[in-house]
Image (cartoon, rainbow, N blue to C red):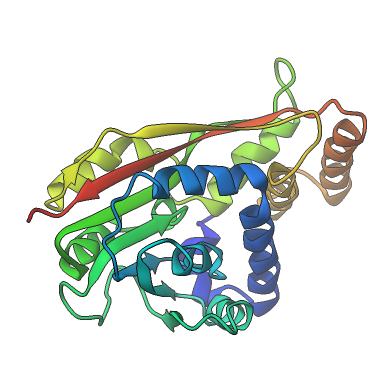
Length: 268
């Protein structure tokens, strides 16, 4: 099953609406906010910085960027018209923010028009990541910063022991919602090939226990993928979802994934 996010503009509207809710719920998670603030704090934003987020979804990170010290303007782009409409709705009243429907691999924005480009949990969903990185390089001014944050999806687990059945849902989620689960491990070489000077990666461990949070949505979506692929029936899918909730209610839940942030600069 292909990654839904990779072709999000052609996904049925009702599914896009549901995914919009997932994106906002994830952005509201305290640990997700902490990881975002950590890597943004490592960027030397110039005063009056113009910032672009590629793959902005519903605009949660773009909204943070709009309020970041030194930022004069934040622009978000995404392929999904539904996500962009939601982003505009949620950012009403924010004067220095705007959103456009655009593909990060082919952007009509002017050369050297941004000081910082952020790609947050997006690049692993892109079929041609080098094309997006080339666009980021073109859009940045001399000395500009690129920040990429994404999951190391190969590390994701909700296991509490050997052969945990819930991990089948995690595996299915990866196959249905992530184009390249190994992308973060190849990313420094891809960034260097695009012309960037790459800084060492920072690892961010994300743990949920003893109750479920964002990773519970992976169980639900992974179970649905298993049904769609004919691997299990509807009753089994509901049983897996119920087991995840039982563990969370009983304070027996454990979930983990490692994220990574990698910063790079365009030469002066």
